[in-house]
Image 1: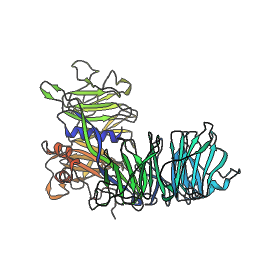
Image 2: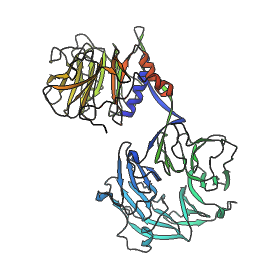
Image 3: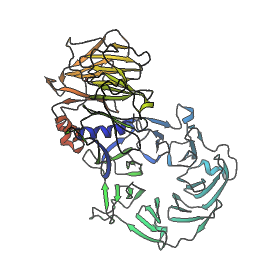
Length: 610
């Protein structure tokens, strides 16, 4: 199941539980901020390069090594790595790019290297003994892979062109310019532009993997400029300098400049431009030494900088900016690591807003499976399935006398097991299994009181357990375990450390530490790591933010965040639905929801706090 897509759909469900499914779409007007620093595992807080590869890993070049980030964990490459295959020749990373054959190219203070993204093998041309070999092992400031899949190298003392074969072996090394300080390279059509300290060059390809220097009549005195960044977009070439931002119309070679104006809050925040990119709306995004800028229509800049509010950049010294396909901004800073800015304004598309017998669809559960299909369970409405690529849902209900139909129309939970099959919990019909190959013509297999040891056909929740290859089943006042291998169902035996009995159990969760969480009138936690005949259950009967008050509302959901924190939701008439749906709207909404969704801070079984 895809957790991000599921989260968006579930938030939509909660926000419109009595009106169908909402699918979210973002707008870039404002952002949620997240920070990735050394505290989260980054090897250094000074970010010098950012690149997202074809597998959607984000590579972060720093002043103390190279990191590959998957959104959760880091893989470190450094001169002193304990893993031989991750050892590199310099920790000071200046630039990163990628070719079309699946190789990541990295410019460092020790030269150029590349990493095969499939095998993760690091190569550094140590076996090349041809002319100008020393260039490949001395400091490199910037690199570019051109239209011919050849390598351009910008150095503090020259511009170099390296022709490569399809195996990424060097054919020859050419010095295009000597005694020039090249800091930026960009492909623009069949041309390559190179800029740096007091210089700007334009090379046109001959069509035979060779380039010729072309006259550059710009009317711009480049000798007084230091070029730091560039971005090609259509006929336009955007150039960042330490003295402002320039946009060049390459058809007539005319330049428009953008500068900081001290009394104009819609001007560029700083003339020292460090990086240029574009968001999914076509707006130019500019990093500077004084914050981030987005150029809007009309030539006005929206500024994003460090402030006192918690939702802001943590450092104004921007080195690199990358915008991914989801319009998320990855902002590399000088001292604050990576700032990740995700759009927060959301518009919705509605599904399943139809009415049955005068009442709206009430959706109790929804999943997006591994293939992008959506399955939604309805209260007294059966099962709705939308195949990937389709715009409509198909409905399946209980048919009296048909043993292959859904066992009951009141669905409480749907999960997909490790083999891709679907398990559907119902209140009134037990559990149904839907084989993945039957999704287009569903045939349901039934697990109920007549065929199993289940004490009741009212199943309020189910949860997968990967460690045991099993399914946990919540039947109000009982918890059962279905073994996928044998098909056997057995009851969970437990006792509470306070001697109190748990009741009204309506939701369960197996967390990443193999602990079973049970929600009812309170929360029970059982450590399943060591199999036992009878388990001890830690029972939390009182609100953690109001310890003098017992939980009187029924807990209806338990979830685990990416950082391992556990939260719960309480059924409080319909207020919890409106509360969760507005939780994204501001701090006031979060405060209103504190009694309904909150962190568990007490030590749990097998956990120590220091």
